[in-house]
Image 1: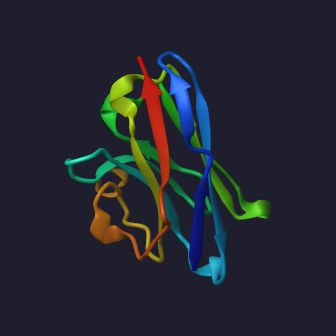
Image 2: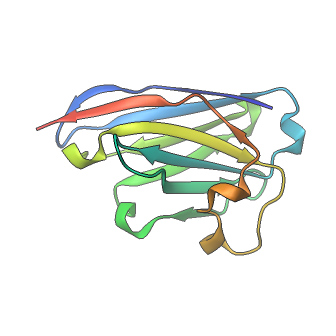
Amino acid sequence: VQLQASGGGLVQAGGSLRLSCAASGRTFSISLVGWFRQAPGQEREFVTAISWSGGSTYTADSMKGRFTINRDNAKNTVYLQMNRLKPEDTAVYFCAAANRRPLYGSTWGSVTVYDYWGQGTLVTVSS
């Protein structure tokens, strides 16, 4: 499975961006797709994830209400809609895919769940 993240860029605080994660290869093996982010000097942080088949989602508490994940299975693409962006949202955003989906959404935020990672796309939010 290969993942290609795109859609990052420079946006003013309060603005919106939509990131895309296009999957290719053995996409039939994907059960879960997640988004993570990593700011300079910080650890990778879970943002949100979606079940590939059923569409169930789980989002980190700090991002609920601003960030939304959805998918287009026909296009093998998962989207991250980010609204009301803040300067502290500045980071490289990564998408990741897992072959197995843990039962509980609260466990989807662990990097060890994921088998494949995209290259990341940079989001910069100016104040």
